[in-house]
Image (cartoon, rainbow, N blue to C red):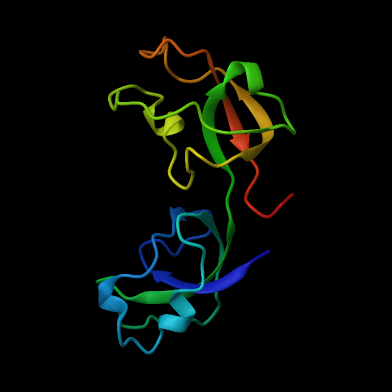
Length: 150
């Protein structure tokens, strides 16, 4: 399901993904706030279309302004424990990881997810990009379904 919203012009390209972080203090008093603040905080979205003929509007948050786009919840790639990595099953993330230099860090702590939430696995992608896990976890790379697609 697509939603029309306003986002910064630098993000306004079909296929671009972002995590909606909610309202900024700079949004107070903005005449466009109802059109901007209509997404779910903490959720990952993908721009599906930039609205034809949309005008760039001034914005106190985005220095180049905002423009109308269509967005939809986006799937998230993540590393999960291999023992639960099956398409169609529900699971949660393995837990926090302090090893920010690891090539898998962004997949072990993916933006747009929470450690205490469960996610349905849409597909198993395969091996994670790291050679070994510093926390000695057996992990598999999966793609979670976008929220609301169950």
